[in-house]
Image (cartoon, rainbow, N blue to C red; front, top):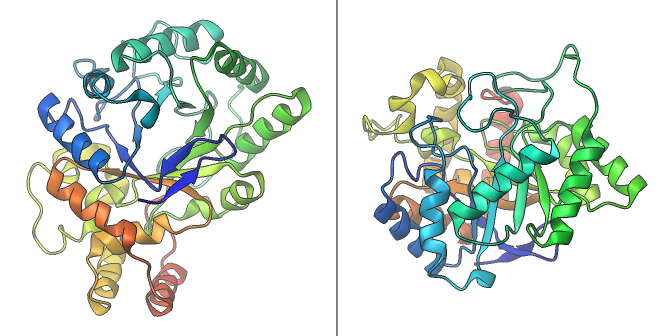
Length: 344
């Protein structure tokens, strides 16, 4: 599988990354290992986790994802595997991780040490701020209309991450769920104070949510801060299985409707049906068309795919060799122009 340099880090990552957030919730430890074995054997060297996983977020399963990845990782050649994780940002509803959910030096140390212990490694290749400390463009919204009283602390956070790079605990750092202003504020401070730049930004991106293209894509291309695209299949909606009546009660959109509201609305289903017709017109699997569209973006570092079975992963990996032709791309753009971003 093709490898790409992540930002300007010198780290080579597979263009498809395995997202692991179902490990510990939908997948047992042995199932998780089987999925990782298949991914690694088929060219995926990049695995993404977070201290808060498994998902949906629950006290009973917090940390299990990293634990399962760790019991797999201990049997691998560590230098050949790229491991990413995340420190949890502020959230009023999550009280069991730490007494303070913020990005102070102490909180980052506690979070990172916990992740390293669960992952059974002494360093991370990529450490990400899971979401900003301030209120910004949250799920289900398209922007910010007012400030929330947050005080700019980017410099102290970046200085802490820089110290962790010098200590050898992390190799690089990245952002997640961040806005154009937030990314450029980081760039400004890194340049001014000669600090290591973020190498990536992990934000949602799919046929149903291309809001990254509005502002962030240009920053990504000019500053070489690569997108790590999550939810490239819209939590499974872009597989087409819900429209073809092939879904099951165990699918995330069925099990957790209250947490996936942006993907189950009438508009989302209607627009997905139009993309399904395009895949059928071009004799493509819907899943592979949707993933290939994301993977071939110029600003993409790696496309994060999730899989609860080896068979799902096999189909996802198959998208890596697919390149959509000009006619298919034109059909996609026509739908996007008429129905832009139904799942922001």
